[in-house]
Length: 160
Image (cartoon, rainbow, N blue to C red; front, top):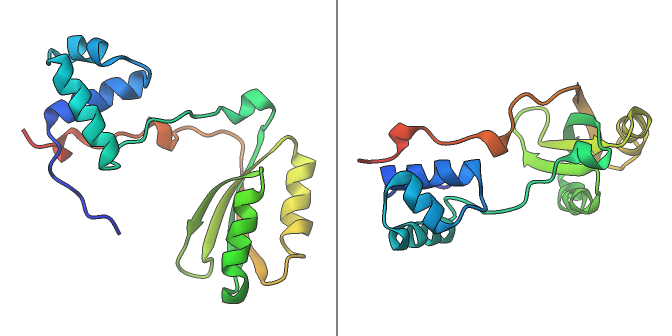
């Protein structure tokens, strides 16, 4: 587990807020918006990326590519097949999220499909027929209200 690093300050917070609005914003635009030197903004962005506090990446909107059927699936995966199953999930274009879990389900995956029939077949046939895999439960997601790409740390997480 990564420990919380308290070396980020209010300027970092302002930069993160600006980047969350527009990850393509230039350092000069951000510098003007938060009233800080452009060189400082460039240096801070580099530090935030290098320390892995932020990632500047592309976020794809699945619905724009026809992926409207979403399911979160909790699985019990036997130890013998665990690593291979994760590898197969990473290769599966319908799996967009994989997380280790505790309790009865030791793996959680989020899936996206073009239609409900494809999702139904995956949950009811593909997964149960995979050796060492048990579907513990699943949730059909008709609408995502708030997603990780909208999340920001609390302002109080940043020192003055």
